[in-house]
Image: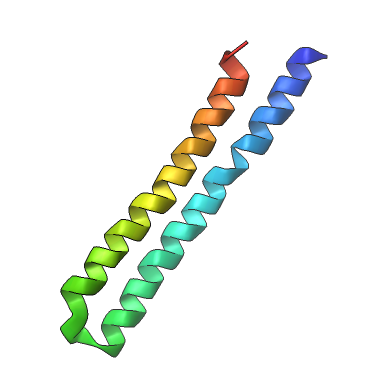
Length: 74
């Protein structure tokens, strides 16, 4: 029973990885749209894009870390 609860909890925690993937896609879609509208802001848009990518990726890694913590922590 405890093992089943661990697997369900880890599966629920790892759902955040999919959200991080969608967030990264949205960040880069915004970069392409912003660059298409105003090419002179390329460097500033790229800087914001890298910051958004790093934050979205960090949330995905935190979700994955929490899933592993549930699976192998106890």
